[in-house]
Length: 291
Image (cartoon, rainbow, N blue to C red; front, side, top):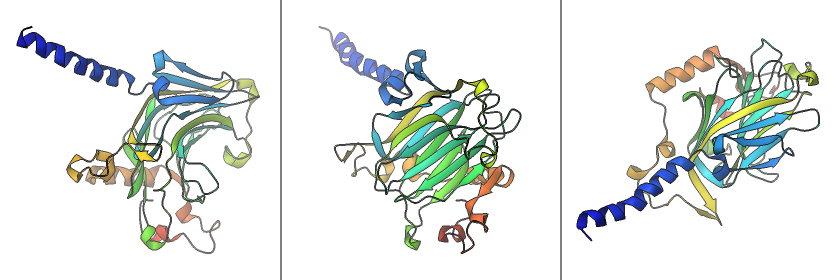
C-alpha cells in the first residue's frame, strides 16, 4: 500500500465524520423530541424544520433531548400569520421543579395588522417578574428570523437576527439570584393563552382561523450538555480555548444596537413600572442600564 493511499484511507473517515457533523447540526431528529400535541407537531425537510399547530382542542410542543448548563441557543422562527390574537409561540430554556430557573422568549399574537409582542423574562430559583417586551422592526410572519439566547455565568443576552435586544447581568453580589446551577432544556410550544396574551386578555382567540401554525428551522446549540451530572465542557479549558459565548461581551456596535432597540422598540420594562412595584424597583434596576 503506497503512503499516498494510506493517507487517503486515514483522512477519509475524518472527512466523513466532519460532513456528518455538519449535516446533523440543526437537525430536529437529533436534537429534539416532540412531547405533546397528538400529531400537531411535525418534523419536516428531513429534520431541518418543525411545525407546531394549535386548534381549539390542543396546542403542541417539543423539547431538546439534552439539558445544558450554559451555551448559545439559536432558533429560526416564522410566526403565525394573520389574526394570531390569543396565541403564544415560545422558545425558552427551563429547569424543572418549584425552584426552577427559566429564560424566556415568548411571542404574543395580535389581531391582523397589529404587531406581535416579544416577551422576555428571567427566572431564578422560581422567581421571575423581570419582564421586558418589544415590538419588532419587521414582520415576523413573512419570513424566518433568528432568535438567540446566550447564557453564561456572567450574563444572559437575548438577540434577534444577531442584534442584542436585552442583556440581563449577574448581580449575585447584590443578593439577586442568577440562573447558573440548574441545567436547563430548550422548550418550544404553540398554545392558547387568550386570558392574558393579547391586549391584557381583552382580545380572544378567533377559532374560525384555526389551525394556527408556527414554523421552526435551523435549531442549533453550542453549549455544555449535562449527562449523568457531568458537563461536556472541560473545566480545564483555558480562556484561550473558550467558546465565544462563554465570555460574550457587547462591542461598541452591539451596545449602540441595544440602545437603539430599547429606545425605539421596547414597550414594557419592569424596571419602569412603578404601579406594579410601588415598594420600589428590584436592586438590579439601579445597577444596570440594560437589563
